[in-house]
Image (tube, rainbow, N blue to C red; front, side, top):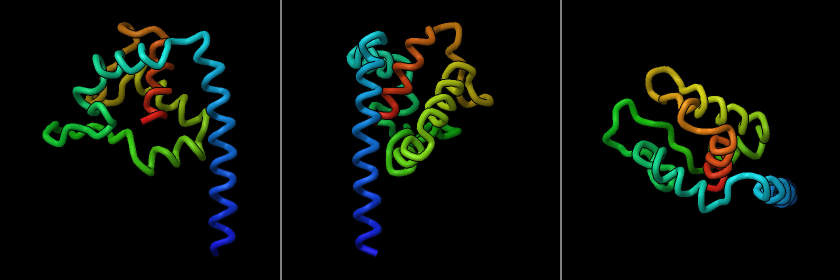
Amino acid sequence: MVFGILIFLFILSCRSASNRTTVSAESETDLSRREADQLWEQRCSSCHGLDGTPNEFLQPKPKKLNGFGIKMGFFFGGDKMREGIFRTIRNGKNERMPSFQKELSEEQIRALVRKIERL
């Protein structure tokens, strides 16, 4: 059992390192982290919180964007997870999440997806 956990952690660390290389290569042409952080603070934090923990008094309650569940989603889902979040930001979701397609560029939305991955 312990051996299996160690193998899992090793694979996780290797995969995380390779993802960081990809993200840093993308960031050369995309918005900087600082700009993405500002965008998050201006557009997203009022519902999802600065750290991804939603305001408990909002109804319906926004999705929690930090923690183990979302980390595992990025780990196992990878680009599929990123594209799903991209579409949700761009198109909105039901009446709970507004569409930002007319307000944000594709580059800005992708920067927000990377921000969510860093939470």
